[in-house]
Image (cartoon, rainbow, N blue to C red):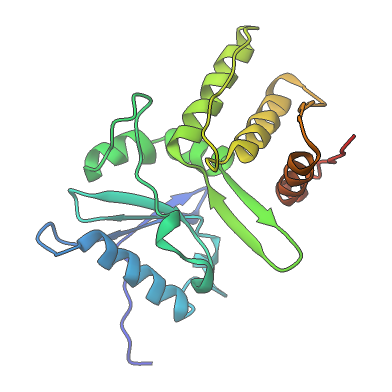
Length: 214
């Protein structure tokens, strides 16, 4: 094989490559998606399978001025709609690579993103690694902070924003920390009940969690 493939930056956690960063020059036109296309090409060539790089969970692409992140996936499941911009709790975009590194890739932030906010979705045909949007991360951390203070609260998310996944991950994190063994979700109609049960079941296999509908 005459191809000379060299990854730009690899971040290791506990000795394993977990985060891969692909960089382009600031002057590169549409550089951030040149980096995305390069990662997809690597995946198509099988460079993330059958070796130590099969442990990769997160990709970061940047031309220094624009930075994005997305979860590892098979080439057929890679889609630009799953490439996210990091935002602060005040909804300010974090585009600069060095600020992104400070807020997202630093320790312990990167460890929390991988351990708490990436999750496997599984159905009969496919297993997909998902990483949460920043607004989901901030919502879950706000819930967690309130729960630790024995306070109540709520999260408002728009239609299609991943409310079921936000609810599921927050429940699992609270269960780990303070021992919640059951969560009840009131639902006002049968079709939504079926949808919620189906979506939650996709996430539950990773945690050996039972889902029941009443």
